[in-house]
Length: 211
Length: 216
Ligand SMILES: Nc1ncnc2c1ncn2[C@@H]1O[C@H](COP(=O)(O)OP(=O)(O)O)[C@@H](O)[C@H]1O
Ligand SMILES: [Mg+2]
Image 1 (cartoon, rainbow over the protein chains, first blue to last red):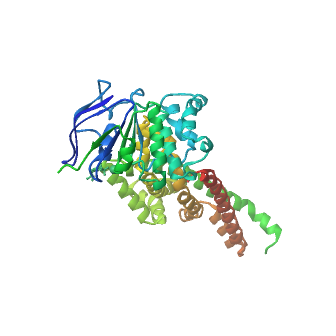
Image 2 (tube, protein in one colour; image 1 turned 135 degrees about the vertical axis):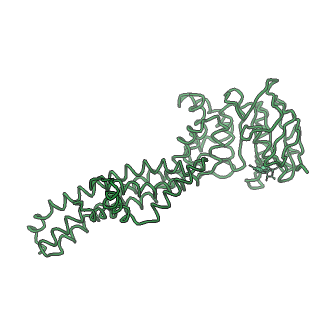
Image 3 (spheres, each protein chain N blue to C red; image 1 turned 90 degrees about the vertical axis):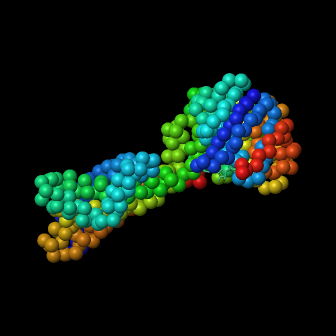
């Protein structure tokens, strides 16, 4: 479980996150909803260690945890970016195994073997040798998810997972997210799509801009 | 005048001129690409004074003629007691000048890669250098190759500027023969040799560009 206590984040004196307290339960799906500009992306960036919080603390399974400084491979916070940020110069399989090989120091064959079930679960088997530019939006998103899962994250965060996709794909995404939940993955999903949030959420945090 | 005997008579001197041209070309490429990478890192660095100095340098080198820089180093600097031999003066002028162009090209390449790529690497627990090496640099290389290629072709031709400081390059070899024998044949041969040199460069650059065409 990841717990946030009195988290504060501001940019240039403007408070974006004001004293937030939040618990992210293991194996559950937490959705964070709210209007654009409410600070949802900022919150995700704080949780995943891309931004440093001004004050407050994180507890991961009861232990103090600083995502901004943490280099601990056992407590990775995975991120699926809004625009996926796949590595265009690497094939799908290399996108997925790059971090296991370079960070976890797995051998290439070992890394490929280990991600095999992730690839199958995300229905990417046919695409492993392709490059990101050859994929559709939905396929890119699944590669982004697979790439994050390959690091065996404690939590997987998504920023607006339905925004870059055709509306027809919304159901697919919710199915996929619920399927990952079945597999015990803890997920945090930012969205301004309330209907989508209702479909997948165990808990919902509603945020609004700080006045 | 277009007879084989005459041509085979002057070819050796043209070839030795071409070899000088190639030496200037090769050393300039090596020196200016390496210097250019460091200058580019300075241009994108967050340390402002450093960035300002390098920007000024790039502005100066790109804003004044290479010919002036060459003459300045070889004829100008000795008046203040700094003397370079011809060949060294030529290499210095070319490397300093071309490094400025390459720096600007690399800077553009580095800045055109989405910052999100570094963040994607970071959340995968990769270090800055791992991401730079495996993800950023291959993208930069692909982006900058066409512009680098243009400069490389320009350099083949610009190398003839060493003529003015009395270096025996391909152009000078042709000019000497033409003046001595009162014929334009050497000029034509020189032109053909430059075409061959730029042709080879173009061919090699295409190969490298093709290597990077596997991704978009
Ligand atoms: N790096 C930054 N520097 C300054 N202000 C920022 C930065 N990132 C976000 N903001 C500001 O924080 C507010 C919340 O942005 P964001 O977290 O992207 O909201 P949301 O994702 O809910 O739309 C916005 O007003 C935005 O301008
Ligand atoms: Mg956002």
